[in-house]
Length: 203
Length: 249
Image (tube, rainbow over all chains, first blue to last red; front, side, top):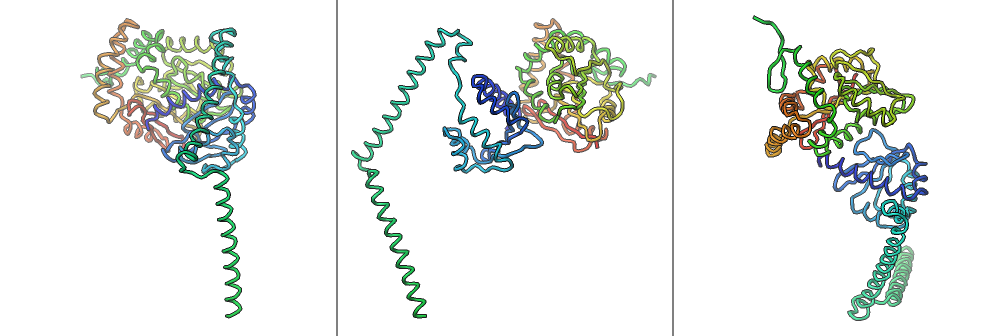
């Protein structure tokens, strides 16, 4: 990829991150404590390496001579991590490999999990507090409605697939079946052990 | 018969001692609107090229940095933050009009404690041997009369292990991009120069001087000739611009 395009992406991302952090002073302070450490994010597919330098502001670059820690994995793994609320737990379970200081990687994961941008303050800087409060209320109402509707659609579609189409078993049914399979596995292991014992005796 | 040495001033061949004066005229003419023109001509992309250059400087607190042909101080401003109160940045330019614009801009923005302003010729640097950790030159080398001599001077004033970074227009190998670039630089640039600075000749010189500048491999060879090691270059925007790097052994 042409370096100019990468630089354009990094400059835009850096601006957006620092702007967002300005509206969450608690997380900004946490990230400041990671200074002057450098974290490398190595995306293996497509190939791209980004360095995150912590300080008064977050600085992103495509080239650096050293890093204190490296997170490497494919783009899907990083997108998956970004979509989780608890990034610390998600990072532990993910396919992303950590080289170097895991404390630095976890520090970033913890801080970004806690990121709560004060959107109303951001809007207030442009429109003033009264208009920002009205817009904020509307947005909160809309996001609440979207969250509830999303959850309802998810629940309803699960119910439809399970009860109407009967494509998937009920949770209890599934648990009972898995319990039977587990019992069968234990019984088989027991028989195998018994056969081995008998075989040893005849030998 | 005259034994005067000649050099290029755009597509014209001039005597070596004439080039410095002619380049000076160009920059006296454009200094006041240099930044506006840079943004207009490159659509702001020159900021991304300089950002990329900064990544390779490796400048740390306490370093001494020379930004030669630093003009309006884009890089010097960034270096000033990086070197901190224990470091030093020297913003140098041969052209007093450009240096004045850079100095006023930096002082207005509150950068003064660790910056020095020096008017000097890149071929005859008024600095001691082995005195800088990093030297940068952005879009200045093609205007230097004797480029080999300037590169040797950079090598002299750099500390061993110090690095030279030269950001300069170069040659693209993409034929389609090359055609579009030629059309843009020989038609649009002089027209923009005429409208913004009332000076189309300076921007005609800009386009011509870019074509006369050595290509990536030639410049890399010149770095090596001047005594630099680990020489490398990185093409930007399809090779329209290239960043050359060399280390003083």
